[in-house]
Image (cartoon, rainbow, N blue to C red):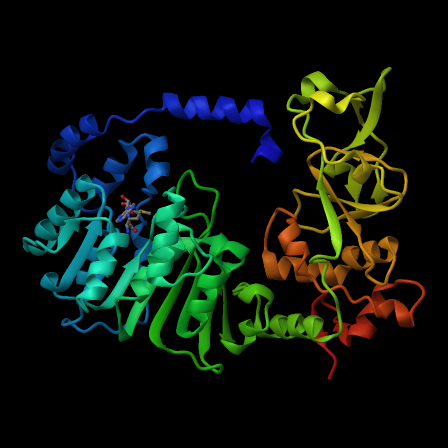
Length: 487
Ligand SMILES: C[S@@+](CC[C@H](N)C(=O)[O-])C[C@H]1O[C@@H](n2cnc3c(N)ncnc32)[C@H](O)[C@@H]1O
């Protein structure tokens, strides 16, 4: 954020958030009015909208729309004796659906740290099923799960949408990570998922609605590894299911049994349904769950990684573009005395570098972020667009400066020249791979470090052409623009 927004903008935003203060007592006082006036899912919707945005974000209060909840139960055969738990039940959307699907009301359990949410859920169970439950309680699930685990209390069904990325103390995160074995995955989503797995019955089912980052970002690698050991039934992309959130909501449904490489996983995204074997995810770097690609595409990804390659991990120096902290003050749209040309991400195109349209004050000493100057002055370097779903690199030999919408890398002895590396990274097939693996709009160093660099291509070819490269990789581009591995 500091790279994109700069300090002044961040401070302004933080101050705006403070103004958006939350009076929990006032909200609680009005709850009984809401319960009188509305019913069913609508109570939760009204309650949610009575909360300040800052409070909702802090606590991760985003109640799941019923169409998503319903779909997550698809194909799960429910037995009335099953015990169901929503570890952070909110307004009860999963709890209510579990009962509608056939779980007996007395077998339904829930926790939430928000006492108002607990009141709403209990009321909804009473209104719809006439049952006064004591099984929905105020409680911090990350603590409760440990007690349940110690008492060997387990559940057949655990379905929820946990508070994504809720801020909790680092020491608490580390404590829970070691209690529930989630390694370096310390986000609340990972902690909730691992805690839930620890109290899920063998043969039981777990359904989690989670942020898209879970499926491919390094932070979640350890928890993905844990999930891979289980029988995964479904991956589903529900798109931007929450008003006001740009992040996509995606679900994972698991059966608590050991995985078999030939297990078929139903992968649903953007009106496509692909049946993929668990095996087809296993060779992905960092156990990425790229369920938006089909089985043929997964084979091409495997092929790209099976051909001898290196990666840029520990084999390049990296630097960010310059953040002035105030572009209005330090940048100009025309050349001036004491100003030097500087390039933005949008100046870097597939066909080359645009003429500079921005000039920057040549004394960088008051800027907010400047990499060691020798990085920009390197004899040869690669500069690349940072906000982009495509890879767009430019081989720079003129010691150009870049703004923070671009980044740079200087390869260290990788056996090919920086110019040759630029050609490989700009190639269509590596761009294709980047999209299929990461499905992102940001070109992150950690993702670039995972891409295969087929350096030996240049032992056989002096020039780079896409056709020669595909031949070298044993991949064919078909007439409709897709790829397949040569027989
Ligand atoms: C994303 S909402 C989802 C609510 C509900 N599961 C649903 O899907 O509609 C997350 C919920 O987690 C609750 N919560 C946050 N931290 C919690 C914790 N440590 N233990 C239990 N609930 C928590 C919030 O109050 C909020 O109701």
